[in-house]
Length: 430
Image (tube, rainbow, N blue to C red; front, side):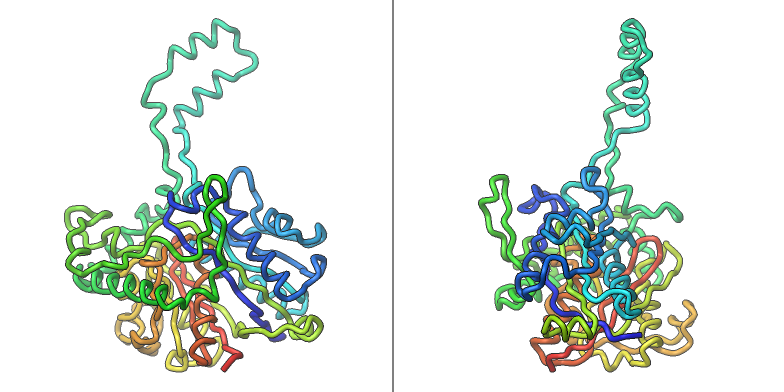
């Protein structure tokens, strides 16, 4: 397998759904990132082999977001583009497919990332309303029959089905993502106080990183607003003034009577996009590129859906085994914060041999020191635009490794449906 280089990665600001990015459809959270990178490196529009984009809430108007992004970015029509869906790790799946194509020698230059407009995920008609419309629009129905059909209408037909709510509920075990976090909190003895302290730390780390301009190199500002008259350059949604006591006042959301997971110690619903330019060694030389990092390897792993939050444990174990590296060699770790309980659970299992053995891991993976973990905050503060996050983690990781002149980084996340994904990268700017 040939080496795969991460030339440069950019992302949009991440903004809570329904706010400043609500008017921007999914493709337009990705196309301008590609345009920027093409211009930055002076690449010809016909020199890109492929565009691979992760997306979960495929818009009806843009059924193949990857191809739409490629064309909207102005790439040559011969450049193929497609969309991948692996729930929360869709952006990471895009990177992994780009990795395989370049490592095998099939491609030289690929754009890979993810986009998600959770603001624009639809409300759906109920089955009753759908059937009502189908009967009413039957071309064979007479005027009298249509009047009879109209008389059968009932107001409750209009009760909507919320697409996001359905998408975040596992069809196999019947539990939503928040309930799976409650399962881990209960089984591993993770208190409400621990979760709120972790969440509070995430908000404050992100607030401080934003204040110091640490995200400026990775964020590409975006024009927004109904008239495209606003420039958004920073993430919007983190709680800069949060306190543990304040977070502790919120009521449990997913299990209202006995739960510990709230909207404050879980990631918010968010809009955002991220994009990487990946290149082969030959392409790096040909186009005189200066990669920021090398993608060492990746791994995905499955487990029971009702404990999907432990996916990072198994995926991390797998990628370390594939590469021969140790967790202690990782200078930085980005572990997506779907829920505070889920991250704390992963950290506990990784360092406990008895707990690890429950999931078929005989040896202890190791301990992630908190000073290496999500150093600029994570999903609880930054949000989790589902299709993008897997790639966004790698963007943030690479930029922070470069800033600190450290070598290895691990990006990992849990995946709805009972999976985990992990990527190891090596900073080339040490």
